[in-house]
Image (cartoon, rainbow, N blue to C red; front, side):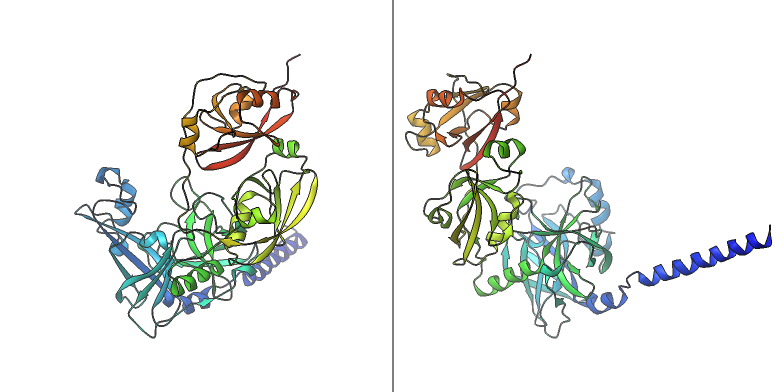
Length: 474
């Protein structure tokens, strides 16, 4: 080989080594962070008496997948395993937040347990008592009888940004003090369902598995910024989408549990839903964003502020609402009595309404579906409705002169809207309907290709659906 060519290759190789070395120097080193904080991370073992789960459902030994027997069998690490002699043992993680023995973990780790044992880093095992739990944030506060314990430093989760490094320490599958790392993928991930709708989750790609629940998520300053709570996976193991409860939410819950024994949350008194393209078109909204108001609770803060059904909430107290799931965490984590501002879209105009945040009742109602009736009338939307009987109104709690009941849903557009027999349609656009004749009259002038907003009620839940009139075939 030519000397010049060899020299060039050697130089390139040396340059590559230097570049690799420089890149390696830029990678984070978690050694000090782990050494400092690992002693404050604990393993939690919760024992449930009886062959049932936390909800009281009977457990059949044959229903437990073999994978759990392998991970949690007698030879498995930590000894956490399902047993069928009348007890069930579950495992999780937690962390010490005060030297006098307060431990923070997930509610689902200890829910329904008869005995809770906290194992410290020095292998001591201490019985723990539950100081308080909160289902909506999935936080539990425990207390062990000890002093001088190592503690974690609490950070500020509001300062987290996507792309930042984070570290988790916990007990996946019972392996104590396992360390994993990754980056913040998203901040403020809401899901909008009844389960933890008030939590704006921190999404990361940190590998989290069974047993990590309740463990701490650290920033690079060694401060706890989240409580590892759950994963999104179709396998039951980490696929790179992990969710943590922001520490600001968790610590607010802790302080309220200490002081009051329960958590007080804000509410403004609206039922809301997402907006799709058809709804946006029908409303004259420039884009499919915001939270569509489907119902306003009489006497609530929203009612007193003048919020109306079919308003679209675009912002709450200066925070933009891109989708309906963004609103509950903002309102729920606002102190009752606080005065805030709602930016709404109504009939083509943006309005600002002052609203006083109320307090969410402790006994929130559950939603249920209802039955239907025989078909009587048809219309251009492909939805068959009928007048409601006095008995139906009594069963559903609907006043006289309100609503028609859906008895059949015909055609692809109507079926895709999600309507089903037994639903009650209260409004067509901004027009209230109380009979099948009124419903058909309100929809007869809708042109093919246009969308119609229907306010429907199912059980106790009220929401809008948009139905598009099919275009005629030419």
